[in-house]
Image (tube, rainbow, N blue to C red; front, top):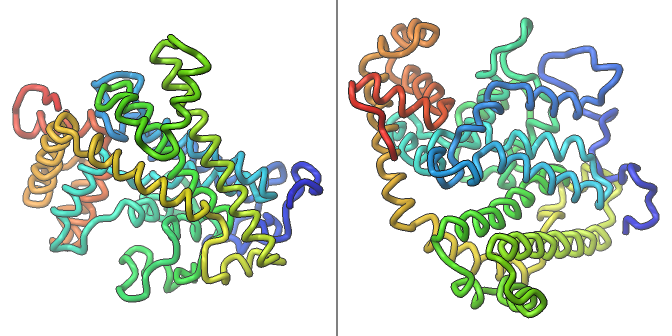
Length: 393
């Protein structure tokens, strides 16, 4: 489908920057960058993006410099998204921007931190990292003289809101998105652009593969455990036959790179098949298709599900990971309770607003503060407030 398209030429169904629906706060656009390039650059220069360097993916920061952080994960997602967008004739800059921004709302300590903060926020509407990402880019980043947030384009905001697909119609929109929606319609019940769909599945490809990489290197499972799994068994057998005696580090890398290639190849083939069937003349048809256009084939989806179940049992619920994350949850729980009950414990630039707020609004402010923390800053704050020695998870 893309063989006849000149390199760099966008397909009719891509997001064309000159057709962008614009920004919430009107701005003169850059003479040297497209609107989506500008979105990407604002994301990279944001404080929230820099803090991803010290936020947990699975392993906390002191367990080793090799393991992925939220930052390295986001960069890997961006690389995959750019490659896929290029092959499909989509806008690489928009795909990259969405990939780089998708985890800006994640808390310290990975999913354990999010679970603890969601539990603490249960009486106040809960906490979700996707909504928090939206809060970061529309409000919490306060760098510009004329507006809060990053003032991203409609297309970038749409892609972040619909990172996991259209928002459900059987429950209210998350509060932050609903408030914004009243002023700028992001069409939350429709599908997002193909670039946003690419960014979402690039996330799946990246974390599946780097979790296998990190899990093997951490000794949470070994190659014998992986041989029986779909997608991986034949790759490992082929490699060990071709390179007998290959050292473990090289074998891990060769396995992962082949798995990434297999997933990318399948996604491209299935997506091109769907595009041939529908022949969408514009991005509007992508959004109104009623089903994803960018997808893995059904057989691969089933194989990925088996692999995901293995990682859930053997990595995310491993005793070593659970012990560390159990302590992390307690740190988040204690910090939230302290700041909520004693807002004078907050730093000066957060304290004034917190003291004046009612419990509902104060809780959201406290959640914003904790969600922005890196792992090590949260541990330092915990040690400072509760006067204990440095905490090691």
